[in-house]
Image 1 (cartoon, helix red, strand yellow):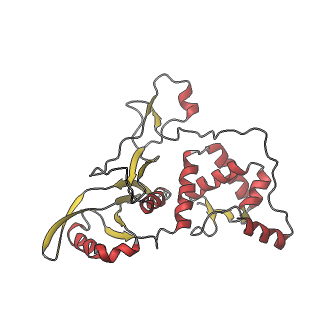
Image 2 (cartoon, helix red, strand yellow):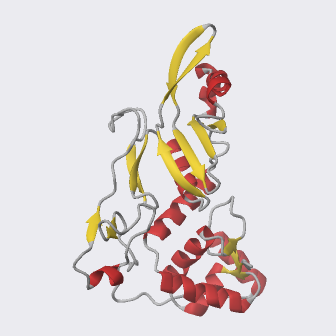
Length: 280
C-alpha cells in the first residue's frame, strides 16, 4: 500500500492521504446485528435479512434469532494440531458453517462474498462411489446454490495432496453416479484457485457486510456516480472525509455489483480505482 501511495505521489505530485488522528473513536453502527437477526415470529420469512435496529426498537413483537447450528453431515473436532479449524456465520442464511483448514476458511469466504450464491452447505452428505472395483463413501467439503438453483459441489485440497490422495479419481467416480442429481458439477479446488489476495478480499467484503449501513452505501454510490469516471479509493476517502466508512461502503457496493473495483483478483488497497456500474 505504501509503495503504491509513493508511486502515486511521485506521478501526480500529490502527497497522498493525510488525516488528523482523532482524540476519540467510534464503534461501527451497522443497520442490523452482526450475528443473528431480528424477526417478527410467524411473519418474517426465513430468507428475509430481518429488521434493522431502527425498525425493531419501538416494537414489542420482535424476537432475536441466533444463528442456527451447522447442518454438516458429520461431526468434526474443532481442536487439531495439524490444521486450523473453526466456524463462521453465514449472515445471509443466519447459519454456522464449519471449516477444517485455513484453505477451507478462505474458500468459504470466497463463496459467501459472491452475491449470486444464495446458499452454502458444509459437509453436505456422504456419497457412495466405486474405485478399483471397491465400494467406498466420501463426504465433499461444500455445496453452493446460486440464484438459478444451480448446485456445485467442491472438494478443497492442497494441490500437493491431489495425487497422493487420488482426489481427482475419486471425484470422477463420484461424478459418474451423483451428477446431476446431487450437483451439476463436482470440482476440486486448491490454493491455485483460492489465491491469498482473492481470499483476503473476500474476508474484507464479508466483514464489511456485517457492518453495513445502507445510508452510507447510498451516499457513497451517489458521489461515485456523480464523478462519472474511475477514481482512486484514497481520493474518494479524502473527498468524503471518512476513510473507514467509505471503505466499508465501497466493499458492500462491490458485493452488490453496483461498484467495480479494479484488479479484483489482487489485494484490495486504497490505490485501487473504483467506478459505478450502471444498472438498467
